[in-house]
Image (cartoon, rainbow, N blue to C red):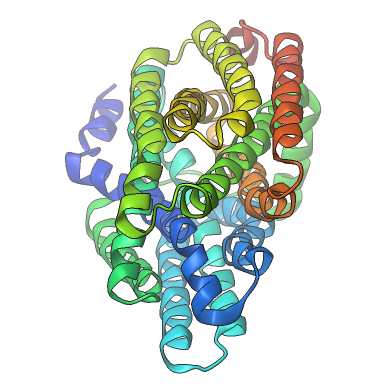
Length: 410
C-alpha cells in the first residue's frame, strides 16, 4: 500500500505536463502542415497528391516501427525509448526546414526529414499510453482521467495546429518545419527532468518469451483487440481525410487563406478537444460506459459523414457537420486508449498499445492521399460509403466488445 501511494505521489503536475507535451508535439508535427499544404504545392511546384505525401511519409514510417518501439519500451524502459525518439523528431524537422530554405528542389529531402520525424514519432507518443498505466497501476479511475488529459493534449494540438501552421507559414513558408524541432526540444527537456518511471524489480522478458506471450494475448483477446484496432484505423482515416478536404475546400471554394483559414479549421478541432476531455472524465475505467460511448460516437460519426460532401458549398453547415464529426472522434479516442491500457497486463502493455497506435497511423497515412484522389469527382459517394462502413463497425462492436470484458480479464 505504501509503495502504491508513493507511486501515485510521484505523478506530479510537471510529470503530467511532460507526458502531455509528447502527443502535443507529435500532433503539431503532422497536423500543423495540413493547412499549409497548398502553399507547399505552390512554392515547391508539386501536385496535390505529392503534397499529401508530406503527411503520409511521416505516418508510414511510424506504422512499421511503433510495434518495435513498444517491445523496446517493455524491455529497456519507457524513458529510454522516448528521449532518443524525440531527438530524431527534432533532427527530422531541421532537415526538412533546411532543405526548404536552401535547396532549389527540396521535395526529396523534405520527405526524408518527414520520415525521420515519423521514426521519432513511433517511439515517443505511443509509449505514453503504457507509461500512464505504469504510473497509475491498479487505479483504473485515475488511469482513465490521465489518459483523457493526454488525449486532450493530443486533440488540443490539433486545435492549435491549423492556427500555428498558418501563422508560421505567413512569415516564412517553411517555418513550420523548424518550429517542430523547437517544440521537440521543449518536450525533450521536460521528459528528461520531470518523468520519473517506476523502477522494475523483474528482469525483462527475452524476445522468445515476449513473442510467445504476445501471440497468446492475440489468441485469447484477439476479437475485441482487432475491433479496437479497426476503429482506430477508421477514426484517423476519417479525421485526416476530413481535415485535408476542409483545408482544400475552404481555400478553393470559399476563398479563405492563411490565418483566417487556420482559425476556421480549428473550430471542429476545438469541439474534438472538448469532447475528448469530457469523455476522459466520464469513463472512469467502467467498461459498460466505454462500450456505450464507442457505439453512440460511431453512430453520430457515421450519420454526420454522409452529409459532409453535400454541405461543401455552405461553409456554416459544413462547419456544423464537421464539428459533429469532431465531437464523435473526440469521445472515441480516450475511450479506446483506456480499453487497451486497462485490459492488458503491464508486461505486454507497451507492445499491445503500440499495435493499436500503429493502426491509428494507418488511418493518418491513408486519409490525405485517398482524399486527394477522390475530392474532384467522388466526394459525396466517398462520405456516404464511409458512413455505411461506420455503421458496420457499430455492429462489430456490439458483437465483439463485451460489457463484462474487465471481469473476464481479471
